[in-house]
Amino acid sequence: MANPIHTININNINNSTFFNKNHKIENLTPKEYAYGAKIKLTLEEELLVPPPPLPPEAFVDVIMERPSLNTANRDWALLDAAFVQKVLHIMEKLRARGYPMTLLEGYRSPERQDALAGQATLVTKAKGGQSKHQYGLAVDLAPVRNGKVVISEKDPWALEAYQALGEEAHAAGITWGGVWRFRDYGHIEKSGPLHKPQGR
Ligand SMILES: [Zn+2]
Image 1 (cartoon, rainbow, N blue to C red):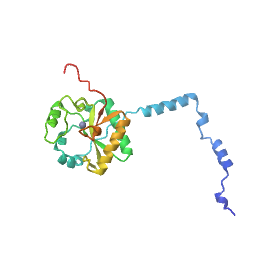
Image 2: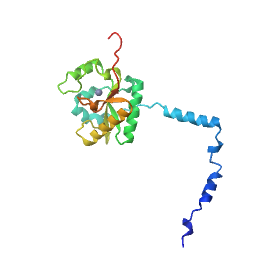
Image 3: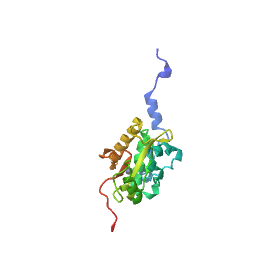
Image 4: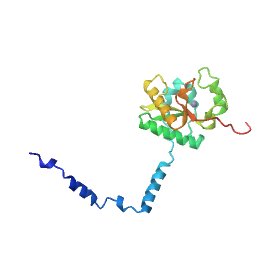
């Protein structure tokens, strides 16, 4: 004989839901419904705020590996605002996939660009005026593991993170440097030709 505790009367459940006074769907007026839709739209359009900078300790290993990063600019405010929103959305997607990323380098002055292009250890081939970093339309990101920034693609987990960056950038219509002949795994930039300022 079945234990009565496990017997469920489906009719009673349906009735209790139907007569529940807190069940509001049928009570929404068109005005209330429109208000709800507006809230949803506002949330979807919400501007993301750049994360606070990581403590200097997080970059110690990375700077030993690539000393030029010691003077890299990581100020989000110097970058193109619309591009920043795309980058932050990509970073949110990556965080959800288990790859938290941080900004390694953002804006680059023409002088710094020239200096990097002239280095023995190749960081970039682009000279002053040729990189989107100088126009606030490119960033270099790197994954963060246990509070430390990891840049080496020889690290399997970091390579996974970079591949995920490539996927999310592609989905967002952003160009990823990982597919270039001179592979730049952490680099993403606004797609399309660079429009230089007039008179330069
Ligand atoms: Zn870059």
